[in-house]
Length: 128
Image 1 (cartoon, rainbow, N blue to C red):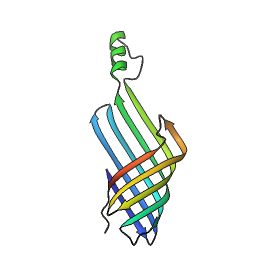
Image 2 (cartoon, rainbow, N blue to C red):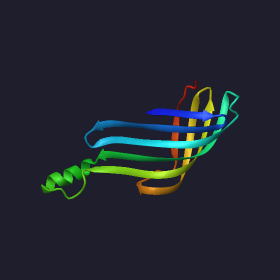
Image 3 (cartoon, rainbow, N blue to C red):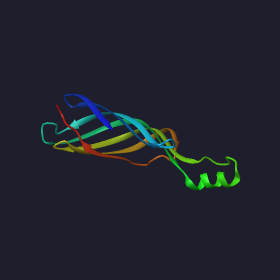
Image 4 (cartoon, rainbow, N blue to C red):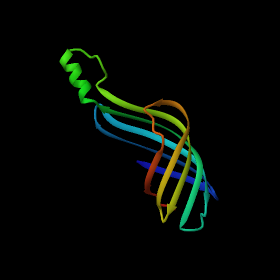
């Protein structure tokens, strides 16, 4: 996962992306971007309020579906489950000494399949 941003005074733009691959039909990937207004930026603690958007896709094997297809000798169902979303969300991010937590509530979905209702991130960001 990579997370980067650029800011001027109290306005910040962030972009993040990442992914992980476990096997041919077992992976996740996604990216997000956001524009936020930073409060208390002179202090070790800060609070960001903003608007973001992103795309995510995840695919995982479904052993029951694989067994059903093997038993019938044909492919009747997909051998994997997937999740996909493309959204715009309202976001709140709290930072203290570089450690952050961010919560996003999607307000509009352009594309959805088994989509999340709350987006949550935790991490450490070094500022220079």
